[in-house]
Length: 147
Image (cartoon, rainbow, N blue to C red; front, side, top):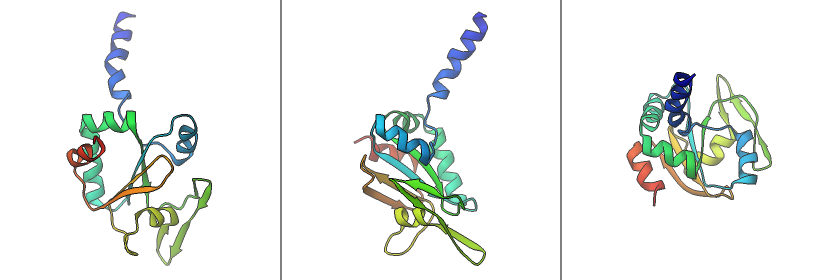
């Protein structure tokens, strides 16, 4: 019994690290605990996106900050699923063999262009405060968010 409790206590800090939440749970969480939001726009084929995600996952101070002061979401820009965000439904737009999600374009476009990865920082009213196209290192994001 003592070993089980000890094992659970050792795992607890890992469970408290930031995990990306869903857009559905974001709406609920914002009602009870409004916070700024960090959204990582990515695709399955983007190797830089994967590298950035690994950096974020291994940077414990960033994980702690995202878990306690922000809501962190990941959005696959090519998802086919409809997403309700801020009371509006967004869908995927298919063009031949490719698709682009309306929400990814709305949040991430920079002068009509969308690149991956893109990080979008929103305030608690879902207004874009900052947008970063390309690789953002975990240490850099931590410094930006911790000010």
